[in-house]
Amino acid sequence: MTTLSPVLKQATPVVVDHALGSWIHGTDGRDYLDFTTGIGVTSTGHCHPRVVEAAREQVGSIIHAQYTTVMHKPLLQLTERLGEYLPAGLDSVFYATTGAEAVEACVRLARMATGRPNIIAFHGGFHGRTVAAASLTTAGTKFRSGFAPLMAGVHIAPFPYALRYGWDEETAVAFALKELDYLLQSISTPADTAAFLIEPVLGDGGYLPTPVAFLEGLRERADRHGIALIFDEVQAGVGRTGKFWGHQWSAASPDILITAKGIASGFPISAIAASAETMGKAWPGSQGGTYGGNAVAAAAGVATLDVIRDEKLVENAAARGDQLNAGLRDLQTQFPGLADVRGRGLMQGLEFFTADGEPDAAAAAGVQQAAIDQDLLLLTCGGYGNVVRVIPALNVSDTEIAQGLERIGAAMKVALG
Image 1 (cartoon, helix red, strand yellow):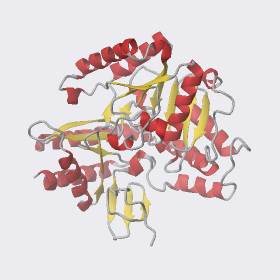
Image 2 (cartoon, rainbow, N blue to C red):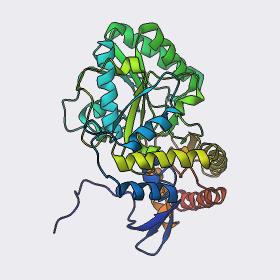
Image 3 (cartoon, one colour):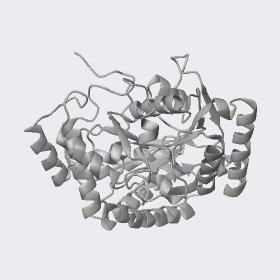
Image 4 (cartoon, rainbow, N blue to C red):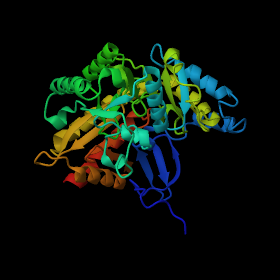
């Protein structure tokens, strides 16, 4: 009998029968409140009727039209709609299929556009599992170990993780910027540095918002040295943080932006955006791919953007995020092992420490597993695996947030005592 790879670790035992909105209905007859959303992918909830209808209609027209062979209307429509949300000046888009593929495309573009070899990424970032993307990933050794050598030309700078250092945020930012400046003096001179690559909110690295002052410090250094600033918005973008893009909490704007995950409510599509001038510096033939910009995924993307606009889901993410954060902070007062509650919008993290101040992966795993018995689905993350991440759909209701908080509290009571 053929089975799935034994290396694939299931976070829950749930087998889905069907799903709708914030709910997964299992083959076991139980109804689960889904605060994982496919790791932030099902932005408009499961099977939103407008997304389903757009995909169904497109399947009956054309499923796959390789977009460097023949063009199709959904991709043109998606490009026009996406342009309404892209930062000023980012008026050229290349489509791929996965976040990792888009990361690799932006690295290639940055190197070609600047004529420089090196990329500086930041400690705790997650950018994918393919070789180049994994080379840029330091969210955990499991993503990058066992298949060396990795891509050359990558250097990792400190991330201002105040809690880990035991500092306040201002001190952590000053330290991380100072160390970045030292890296540019001692390891990768600006003349060799093509790009800075960072997530506006760390994803697998711990659901940790990048401080505004740090993003703005990167922008200043990028401008000073002629370095491209790349924002990986794969997980933080498309309304997740209560603004359309996660970097919009700051005044910093990217030279290249990466988007995927929530852009099409579960259909596989990703993109990088840059100025037409920058994109034009890519070498002929350097961009392409068989499945990039798939017609059905593009149609779902158009419908997703329409739903986000019409149902005011960015605003809902901000409001429900405030509700969620307040409830989680209340739980923090009840459980000493919950060392930190942080996040923006509907991208919230709970970090657990032991009594002696060490990362407590067992507590995070215990809460995540206990939540299943409460019919709530959660995930863990972080370099030590000691963070529980809470990722509801952007159209989650206030009642569902209240239900989720009640179930998280019950799970913490079981797991932590």
